[in-house]
Image 1 (cartoon, helix red, strand yellow):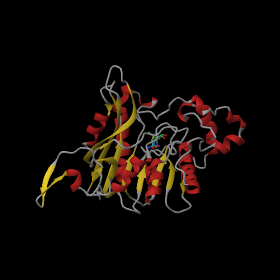
Image 2 (cartoon, rainbow, N blue to C red):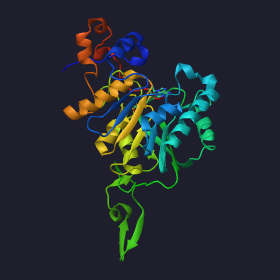
Image 3 (cartoon, rainbow, N blue to C red):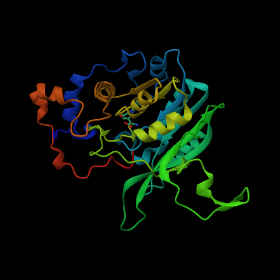
Image 4 (spheres, rainbow, N blue to C red):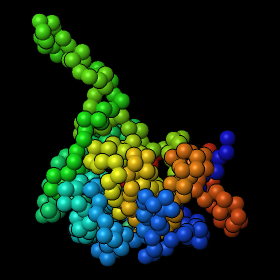
Length: 333
Ligand SMILES: C[S@@+](CC[C@H](N)C(=O)[O-])C[C@H]1O[C@@H](n2cnc3c(N)ncnc32)[C@H](O)[C@@H]1O
């Protein structure tokens, strides 16, 4: 089995710089999908003109936003600054969202720092035109802090709407079997249990998701080099519930391109952006790789294998899988 991942690109400046030479688009440019479905832009989500450039005259019915919030530029003491920045991309989202649209936001809560920035973000959202709809918790398989605290295993996902968007959760059954029994009812003179009365053996998706595997290096969908990948299953669930086939989805923080790929797999076009050309290139390559091979990521490889083989100056930055500990994507993103 081939084993050639690359290190996290946010932690390896030299490799990141080298990979910039492999990028097809740079700041202010757009990659148009030759199949005519998607669009990837190298833009700043906080700049209204950048968002307009990506969207053109189109409006999306669904926005799936997963901003970085614990990066160096926004140290924890700068929460107000971070929230002001969020307000900019939220306003930009609203400006290109259908009048009946949905906004999902992944946002973290640091329990060691008064749960920042989640509550601050929620309060800020009260003064926007969006209406709060749900507060979803996705359970990670692995957590941290088991000795002196409850193990931290949750990821927070906020769901807001504008107008009256479509919502189809009826189709959204999880893979979790119904296990709780003991709730009986008489139906036609016969005592029936809750499990017998329902159409499915499994439970419907509620606002606690415990059936989604966190991305880690042994998974096919893993994109080595990325550090904040959301599981495809979580994004597919959002897309299927809050958009219809053919309707436009957008994501301003593309990174590994999970929203893009989930949209491709669910028959929706996706307009997405990232401020960093390297992640834009990863998104393009992930889509191309999927169309070519049917694979959703690079379990034992990475998107830049060919480039590194051809550029010996970059090859020194490649590590071996065995050196990577049981690497789950960081819980805080
Ligand atoms: C948390 S990651 C998103 C992860 C993504 N949902 C996935 O599943 O791969 C955040 C991304 O936002 C990008 N980013 C940071 N600031 C940005 C900005 N102002 N505009 C657009 N993208 C930005 C980063 O480069 C990073 O790739």
